[in-house]
Amino acid sequence: MVPTTSLLLLLGLALLAPGLSADQCVLTGNWTNDLGSNMTIGKLSSNGEFAGTYHTAVTTTKKEIKISPLVGTQHNNTQPTFGFTVNWNFTDSTTVFTGQCFVDEHGKETLKTMWLLRSHADSIDDDWKATRVGTDTFTRLRKRWE
Ligand SMILES: *[C@@H]1O[C@H](CO)[C@@H](O)[C@H](O)[C@H]1NC(C)=O
Ligand SMILES: *[C@@H]1O[C@H](CO)[C@@H](O)[C@H](O)[C@H]1NC(C)=O
Ligand SMILES: *[C@@H]1O[C@H](CO)[C@@H](O)[C@H](O)[C@H]1NC(C)=O
Ligand SMILES: *[C@@H]1O[C@H](CO)[C@@H](O)[C@H](O)[C@H]1NC(C)=O
Image (cartoon, rainbow, N blue to C red; front, top):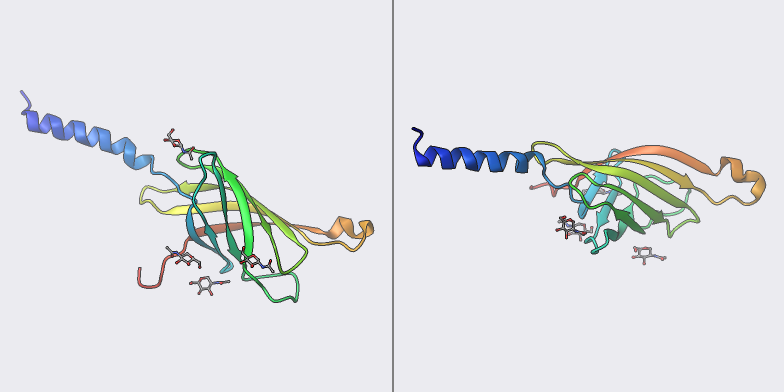
């Protein structure tokens, strides 16, 4: 005969365990990537849309970098796939990102993304060389004292 308290404890652990493995990966917040670029993603709307800002550390142009707006959309599940577009407002280029938000057993979130960067071509003859492709990994940006 197992005492009632032990049964309750076992039941509690059983309920807790799946909760731990199913941590929610949340896009909202501040992120930094392998190049030192930062982005801020705002609150999700009820249909999974979001907006934010992107502060790139690198650019293909010689123009001064400015924080640029982004808009995107995500699925609603624990490790959602998403996509967003950055409309660079200091140059005539556009980047689209697509990726997935992963969360490990310690709650650490990682965004694995791929992007296409479309640069402005002066004529259709230059179209062939106007798109670059790459990958970026983002982690949550913590303040130094955190
Ligand atoms: C996120 O970044 C924005 C813009 O740089 C800043 O205003 C805000 O304080 C940051 N939030 C957190 C939680 O670090
Ligand atoms: C996401 O799904 C959860 C559970 O199904 C629901 O409670 C929540 O309102 C949904 N959120 C959005 C932004 O659709
Ligand atoms: C990103 O944020 C970090 C930490 O606040 C800062 O040191 C770095 O200069 C920022 N990068 C850009 C491109 O703003
Ligand atoms: C560029 O976008 C940022 C972020 O949305 C905004 O604060 C800024 O005013 C915009 N600048 C121009 C020149 O449109």
